[in-house]
Length: 245
Image (cartoon, rainbow, N blue to C red; front, side, top):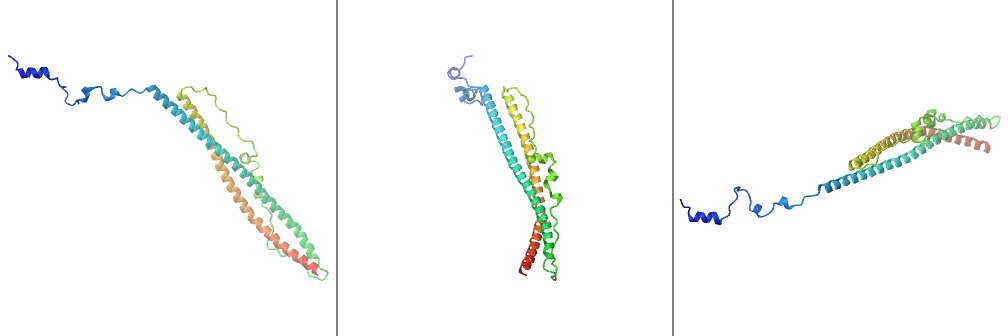
């Protein structure tokens, strides 16, 4: 049986179409988009990431070390403040003790002024509002804290603590070893920072306690000074009366 002429022409002159109807015409024109993009160099990308991680780890280590140095500087200032408070507390105790010594001399002077004035003059007795007690022994700061090594170290009296020995480590070669070495440095620095912050907290508590103690010590000291002024005023009046007579 002969094939029709139009079917032969169709089969010979027309190119065959793809069997997959979902394929686009652009697929047959050239290479795909994925094939046109060059392949990235994996080794170079990994090296860049490793260098970036090492750089960031070193920056973090420097920042942590800066925090440690700042905390140590604050601790030095706090130590000086503690020393100042320590001297101030001792000065308050010494001043109060001087006021008590003045009161003893004033008592002798009052007795002498009372005995003067002539045979028929009325004896003079000084007026007193309250008894001068002097400094309380419990307020002595040095007596309560001199034997405490931690407090002595905070005040700079005792030598500073010895630093822990550094671990002997080999020179890191790979990026992983370098990162681990930086993390170890960060852990040590953070441990030192935590210890310093704990010391600062204890010193702040001690400062508050010392300030409260000094405030309480200033109340009887002020009362004793007011009493001394009152009695001195009476003794001066008695002396002026004796001189005027």
